[in-house]
Length: 203
Ligand SMILES: Nc1nc2c(ncn2[C@@H]2O[C@H](COP(=O)(O)OP(=O)(O)OP(=O)(O)O)[C@@H](O)[C@H]2O)c(=O)[nH]1
Ligand SMILES: [Mg+2]
Image (tube, rainbow, N blue to C red):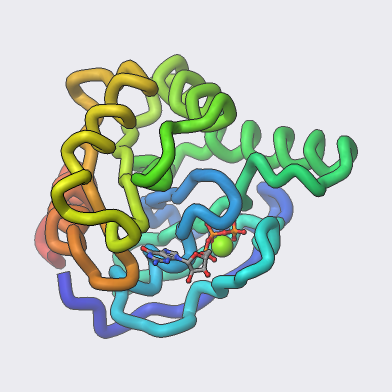
């Protein structure tokens, strides 16, 4: 999908601030610094619409980006950042659970992992939680440019095995740096959005 219109809507801290227009939402989950905001920017061909940072844990809110007036990307705050207080962690948990567990317009979660490393304990908890609540999930293994092509399959297998990935969970390799995997990820998003009849004609 070639995106012509993408705009930042709101940094929400709770349900009262979520948009009310009923458009479908694709959320991005993953460890802090894994590349969630970078992936949004890569998909929509914008350098810095979704704010990225070299300081992990920067995104502490749910950031809504409206794409072509068709759907939202929701950039979720990253987890697993060690230097966050207990209170902050509890606040994060409540916010995420409230969103992932109750948001009716949520269509799919893109769970990001770093292709270089096996998914962490936090990653596994998140994946299992999503499966338990039957949230459609796709896994994106990113930062692929940081390892050589010959290593990709080996690392993908580690991701698959560590998650005990369900056969119906798509897994894609990606790089925000080289844009590798962009088409495949878009295809996956589009096929999820197509399940929503109202947008079928607009894509
Ligand atoms: N080489 C390479 N670097 C990447 C890639 N994706 C992200 N990065 C870098 O990783 C760092 C973190 O990226 P972000 O997109 O800000 O990560 P995030 O998941 O949004 O992090 P939080 O907002 O803290 O949760 C930045 O310095 C990015 O430039 C990638 O595919 N390849
Ligand atoms: Mg971010």
